[in-house]
Length: 612
Ligand code: F6R
Image (cartoon, rainbow, N blue to C red):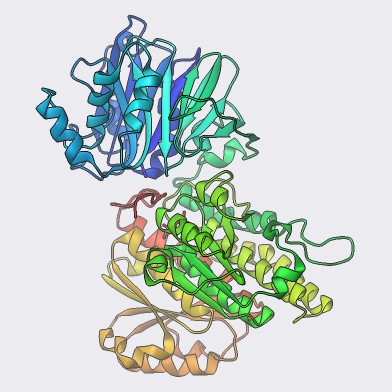
């Protein structure tokens, strides 16, 4: 949460920092601000509550001379300490206005630090924990900003990424991190710091991750990284091969709509290159010997939100194909109930961002119990990827919209591939069967394209029902996790009450929610359980529900009970989530747009949830 950018180079710092913030706005949009060291040697700080547009407007009213300079820092905020108003927007400055700080994270000893500062005569003008850091640096500064930052970091409890500049150091931006992500962008005659690489890929593709408790000194002509004692540390440089266009809207009104359309390609990329010359499925990313895979006794999948839903589908695939017991856990609950783990347990941690605090803590817990942890992440070099034993990178490209679409799709693919690989190594499925399932999976990008081409009636339907305040989603088998996903998409985008249920469960309580005209989306792709689902649909329809049924081409068993019918192409029922998910994404997006809402940046949310 919160997006941070730092820049020093030869370009207009304001342009670079604002460009970076635009790409990081998905991380939080309660307020935004910049500090520019201008050509007269002063620090100009401009900050505004609300989205980046408000900051842009304020910058337009600022004297351009005050903003012209080649060193700057910027921030887009997801509020933790203090209301989302101008006063609490970052950057924060010290008493003299010489130090400017942006911060992502929460400081646990903030009250103590603040009381100490006030006692020593500092005046704090915001409610944030961040401002304390600016004043502490003011106290410690003795001509070397990096030294002052290191000294302050040693005193901070909690999680932080800090990016700091000082009026008297015209060529220096200092960054520091603990528990949250900070990446260095390495350019020619310019260097960058950012919460993630999307902020600078328009300028450089060479990057380096900053590790735990490290401090970076960024200058125009170079970068040094030390630990908190000031000892230099080495780090690995990596190349970012994401396409810059992928981080742009490319003519779409919203990133989410573009990302929905990118799904066939994302699936294709994630599946690509998996069969070796002997016709065997390759999943080298798991990095486990065949013997260790054969010795596994259980799989535990952890994730939050949509990632958790992908894990629920993964359970079906792994249990069905590899005959291993699988438990799926919401990551924020996992470590608090003392789960039974051992070296024969494979833990799969699913996280698009790779920075979700709950999932990261689950990974740490699992590794302490000596389980083997496989991260499934979309973000190269992310904390979860680095702290796991092995990483399966989904190849979805940058996902900017807060509501996850193409990343979930690729997580589903990852689950299928893990299931098939475990089945192959453990000998539960022979080579021909694995190849046949893989072939079915390889056909899904074309089927997803076909579904996308059929979505106009779904858009129309969404606009028609956009006045509803409650929508229910029902499914069975792999349809149940997708019902949860459909409900999550609708509630986070349209702010209506949406719930997903296993269809067989509604008669045990939720059916009481049905009244005349209640919209119920029923996921009914062809499956052995379709006939049972038909009974459930009849039950709710008899009570006045408007049934919106997603059914397979040619399957007429549910048609008589559907008020609205959405058809998807035929595929194996286990793979059907890759198709049923699409109409629900479109339904949620269009429903929310019809209510005049911004589907890329739903209220109160942030893309990367780095607080527990
Ligand atoms: C919903 C959504 C969230 C994320 C969840 C986990 O559309 O995007 O529920 O799935 O916050 O995020 P990651 O995958 O980054 O750990």
